Length: 209
Image (cartoon, rainbow, N blue to C red):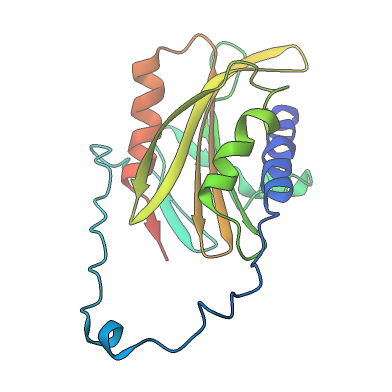
C-alpha cells in the first residue's frame, strides 16, 4: 500500500504544482475608473446560493483532523497518517482498512497544498486528464459536487501502478490559494456500490475548520 500511495501522491502533487500557473493580469486603467453615480445607485447582485451535495449518512468510525478539515472513517478503518509521513509520503492525513482482503489495502489520502494566486478550479479541471494519464489512462470526469460549501472536482477510473491495478476516486477542492485533494483508492474487484458507500460516508462527515 505504501508504494502505491506514494505513486498516487506524486501524480496528485504534479497536478497541483503544474496547474498552479494562473496569475493576476495587469488591471485595465479604464476598468479601474471610479463608478458613476448611476452605477453606485444600482443594488449589488445577490450571491448565488450554494447547496451542499447530499452524500447520505456520514461515516461513524474513528475521527481524523487535518489542516483545515476533519472527517470520520468507516468502521474497520484506521488512521495511518504517521506511517505515511514516516515513509516520506507528503500527506496531510491518511487512513486505510485495518483488515484488507484480496491483496490490496483500500485507503484514503488527503493532500493540502498552496497554489499561486489566480489559479482557478477550471485550470485544475482542464489539467487533470493529462496529469493523470499515465496512472489512469481512461479517466472519467464527473459533474462537480459541493463539499461543505465549496465546489469540488470529481474524477475516477481504473489505475495501474507498478503492475498493481486499483480504482482511483478523487475529489479536488480549491479555496482561495489552497488545494485540498481527497483520493480514495480501492481494490479493482470491489463493487461500485461498496466503493461509493465508503467515499460518500467520508464526504458526508467532512467539515472545514
